[in-house]
Image 1 (cartoon, rainbow, N blue to C red):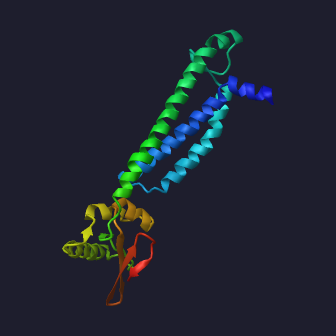
Image 2 (image 1 turned 180 degrees about the horizontal axis):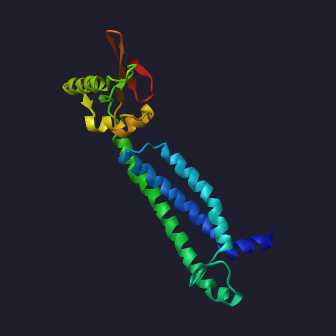
Image 3 (image 1 turned 90 degrees about the vertical axis):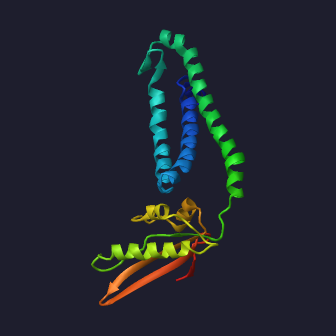
Length: 223
């Protein structure tokens, strides 16, 4: 067992694993910040975490098989070359691990002591709402234009209420055709309420449904 541990150290497998874990954590933290900016659902981060976790195995396997030499990665080197480059390899790998860990710790400190207090200070105001594009549930699927018109008219009317802050149409309608959780929509748009609805035809009748949802718990306030 001791020989195996020594071999892991000699082949830099432990250093590589630590660097991979620290780099993966830093990448996930950055994606959690960037995904909402570009309108990418935060649920996609789950797949990134899975890929990084699965990728740990081949990374460790490659670090066991391949060796880092001054000429680059090689499958095998003789003892003389290995002994000559061992100190340089260790210093380089230690430097990489230290840099990655420093970035991870630095990001954690900034997020914990700078961004998090700022986000708590800028709590979502209760008198905020986003109007999502209404869904066309007509059997023929030919009422999308009418559904969009209904939603836009409601948005314009709500925007005229002095004490009510309404998310911009461009922002709220970026979720059209998607079905993310209400909490994710509200968080992205920084609103406390979400108004959604649907339009469907039934013979000569048009049925319009509107639902006001509280982002805090996801429950309907009225429909």
